[in-house]
Length: 480
Ligand code: SF4
Image (tube, rainbow, N blue to C red; front, side):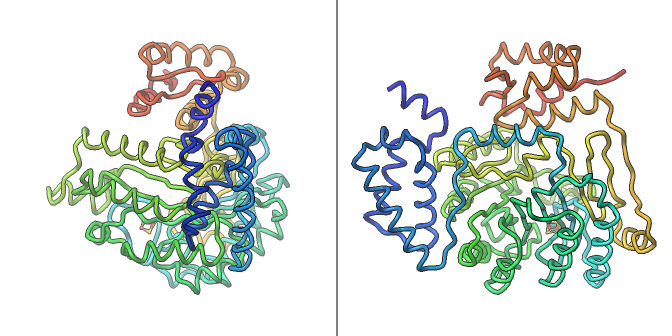
């Protein structure tokens, strides 16, 4: 019993019935397509655990191994690429540890084009697609101009974000990859993500992407409710979203992330549950879910001010968040960061680097970079960006990060993760004074069960996760 208790704390998916049901489904129901991928993957995550035999018994484990081999043959016949090996239970900690090294390993490429603007979005992007090819040249030139920024260290993750990177054509991507290869090298790249809009992810487009170095797709689905998608001015509908995931799978992508938004106008418990069920049924490896925020200057903010739409009340927001955590937990997702969930071991390396505060290079208008000492951000205007780069000059602002700012950033990012704030690193990096400050401020929250110390890390509890913003601001140090 003790053993099972210990295992359940590592993830409910490891419960006997989950493993057994995946095994049964593979053997008896012989699911096809994405469902087969899902059950195989679910089982595969326990595949190497020595506990598997202990949980489902030696006999079943042996049959499961045999079934897996059968499925592998089926996969091969269907031309589906083998799944990456599971990273194991301590993988997230390991990733964070790796990320603690001061090596700069992440590159962010901003693609600022959107076909249309969504009414809630305050990211920098433009609908001026006629500037695309000039922009790609400028972007490549910026990559070249800043080749020393990473001090010759190998890039391990590349993330194309936007905007809408899936608005680019094959030759655009090839030009960017060629430049990265030439000036930074790509031999050490382990994760290359493309942010995409579902309506761009047609069969042809995903097949083209598969020929490029991408190995992860992150798509903004937001909701499966067509009326709400229309209200948000999204270009896709629910059917296109589902098809997009299928197209990616068929093209061979086995690391897919989707974004959802909750607390949208008119959101009900039922609608949110339906969205989550739909997301789960797609069997994606990663789900990000954010509460809608009404940012000043956006169209949705104006609608709110004009009382044409209404904000969901706080009680509902809390309920939606509870539903999110419970539903995804029951479906076997790990809640590894406040807004992020993944299948066991499928932690995105790119996000992990950023949360850990390791240096990264960001290129394109409005893109941020961080080299350990200072942060800089490019000008947020496509035209000015192109013009300045074409004239061999880069327009950006920067800020030197002092010890307090770095401490605050460390708190802001790490408290959001399941691992929490590493107290030993805090002490090493920021000396005893800030460590003591953090402990003093944490004390009331530790006493009322909103924070706990696990493994020398300061972590949010389930109770604390609902008030994480308040706790975070308590822990942050404000200089006089
Ligand atoms: S597609 Fe993405 S970046 Fe473009 S407007 Fe919509 S939310 Fe913003």
